[in-house]
Length: 152
Image (cartoon, rainbow, N blue to C red):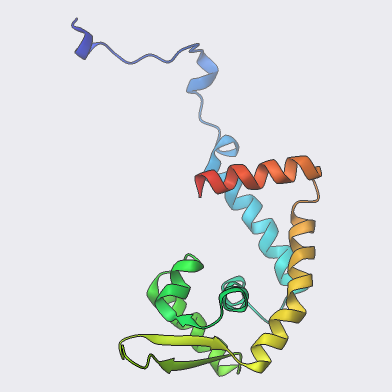
């Protein structure tokens, strides 16, 4: 056999590597961790969804921005962020207006009610993160977040 047709072999290959265990797969473990976090979030912040909270938190950080830019900043596609913004607008948390020169852009900003709500929720969000990461030491939690950021 030529080198290009040789079968691939793993270094330090053993039989255990061939067995597929769902509980050892990154997607499965991430989904379970995410479900745990969502459960904690819902128990502490029942009146907003995590995407709604993310939109308010990012607007609080950056101020007025376009709806599309906000979607990019919180990892949501245009259709999803539109629905999130529409629901926040109906609750009086955000205002929408057209950009002065580029009428294609829809600008989103916090209302006074939205600012008050997010400022009250930020301490809860910090506590939620703490509770989610509670099984880890401070060093493990920091390493975990660094590693997640590398693959995100």
